[in-house]
Length: 196
Image 1 (cartoon, rainbow, N blue to C red):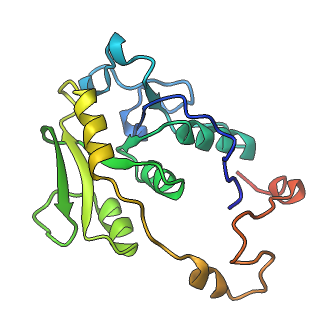
Image 2 (image 1 turned 120 degrees about the vertical axis):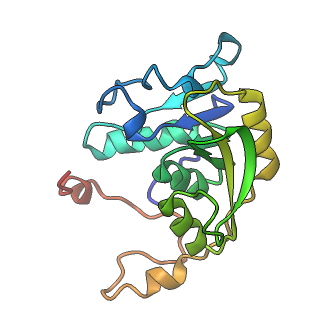
Image 3 (image 1 turned 180 degrees about the horizontal axis):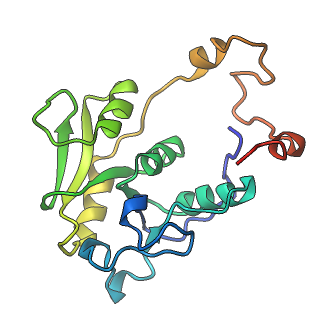
C-alpha cells in the first residue's frame, strides 16, 4: 500500500533471494558463498536470473529499491521468509527454495511434522490459510536446473487470498489511513523520523 510498484518493469524471469547466511559477507555488495553450487548461474541464464542479496543501506529509499529489485522479477524462489512475503504481497509466483533434496518440486504438507519445513515458512503460510507449501528442494552443494525451477514455480503457484482489513480496523488507535484504500501516502516527515 505504501509502495505499489506499478511502474517497475519486469526485467528477469527469476529472482533468487538468498538468506543472509548464504552470503560471503553481510554487506549489500556480497555475493553467494562460492561453495553453494546451487547459486551458480550458467551463461545461458545470466540475463534471465537475478541473484538477490537482501542487505541494503538503512534508509527508506534503499529498502524501496530492494523491494523494486524483487518486483522486477517474473518469479521468485527464496530461502528467506521475507523474500517470500514480499513476492506474495506483490502477486509474484514464488516457491520456498528448500536447502535439501536432489532438485525436485514438492508440495509440502504444512500440517505434517514429518515434512522438513522451516518453522517460519510453516507459521506464515499456515497463518494465511494454506495447507501446503510450494517448495523447490535442492541441497546447496548441488547445481540447479533453472529451467525445472521456473517450470515448477509457474506451474504450482497460486496467489494468496487474504483480507487485511479486519486486522487494520482492529488497530487500537485512530487510523491515519483507510483500510479500504489500496494506496497509502508515506509522507517524508514520517519517513525521516524512522530510526534504522
